[in-house]
Amino acid sequence: MTLIHATKTKGLPSKVKGLNYSIKKFGLSKCEPSELEIKKTLSRFDLYFCHSGSDFSEVASDILSRIKPVEDSICFLNKRTLISNLEYFQSHFLPTSTDRKILYALKANPVSAISKLLIENQIDGFDCASWQEIEQCLKLGALPSQIHFNNPIQKSAHVEMAYKKGIKHFTVQSASGIRRVADICTKNRGDIELAVRVKTFSPNAKIQMSEIDCGKFGCLPSEAVQLLKEAKILGFKTGIAMHTGSQNSDPLSYSRALSQVAKIAEKVGGINCLNLGGGFPVNYSSGDHYDVAEFLGVINRAFEFYKPSIFAPGEDNQVIIEPGRGIVGDTIDLIIPILEKRHGNKLYIANGIFNAFSDAAIHNWKYYFETYTLDGRKLSNELVKYDVYGETCDPKDKLNHKVLLPADIQEGDFLWVKNAGAYMDCQKSNFNGFEGPKYVLYG
Ligand SMILES: Cc1ncc(COP(=O)(O)O)c(C=O)c1O
Image (cartoon, rainbow, N blue to C red; front, side, top):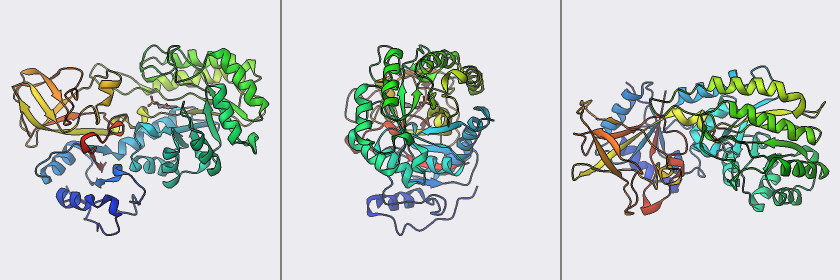
């Protein structure tokens, strides 16, 4: 196992001076600047290291054995898995259509190395939630035409900065949303796509996004018709957006949503752009057997069937998916040191609900753990229920469920979360000053 030769830390911005220490501490190289540039503006997510190995277990053992003591969580990002996920969407989502676009929903994991690799491998663009996300994509080399500003809540200042930078695609779901965009985008509206997000029924998604009682995502079909008419009167190109919910287990929810979209589009004489959102699930537990091919198969067939009703004839049209979880979910293994074990069944870990496990508190999300020991020790087959506490001072910084782990697990061992790539460390806060995990890139 060889490591990329150490590169100099010279030239790093003072903001990330701590990295010098980390590099020494890790005894590893920072990525070659030519491969992944470290720029002044990049956030702490960019403190990552490259490893030339391709096997997670070998890479993890090598890295962990070089750090003494290991007291921080580490994300091991498999570049090969990331690229093959993108290639899978590229070859299975309407593969022969020139109208189709695959955007990466940056919010799922904004680590710059991920966006860079996606750009290098011909991602069509990015779904962004804020000006900050837009700016990050632009700095990494995305073109304004590749950026879609689709957040359900938008600030005028962000819309204005996006418009001035040449962003040409906005999604709204209310009359005031349309007014905000129209007040700012006063010129060349015929070049700007204004999509209206409609609520879709998808009870089998883990995170419901556009159910009737969700006041944030989407409007009712009747409202969508009114909003699209208004957008047309204002001179915009129009689109319909939807999201069937994150970690959606029901492929048919997409065809149901498409039939609803077709009815709306017909009532307004057709639209230019259809955005089917994300939602593609990841297999988290041993009981999950989702197959993205099945989802894309349903989408492709339903789209071909409804296409004549959806698109305005004779115009430039595009059909978009914007996976977040589906692209990054299974690219990361998260290794978390156990800092203390008390009273037999209480573990205190270098992470918590203010860090990668915020969805335990927000969405009552259940996590699956394996154990990892540095020396490859076999832990006992006897499983015991543990309370797992985070490292902050908040007494409620504790996982929402008991975790079954070997009876003899101890301080210095690790919890191992597979498929930890989406919506984990990027949702962290800085509470108590704790930073998120460092990243190791391999594969
Ligand atoms: C507008 C929008 N598009 C796409 C996504 C990505 O969804 P997923 O991660 O389920 O693929 C999200 C997630 O919140 C979203 O808000």
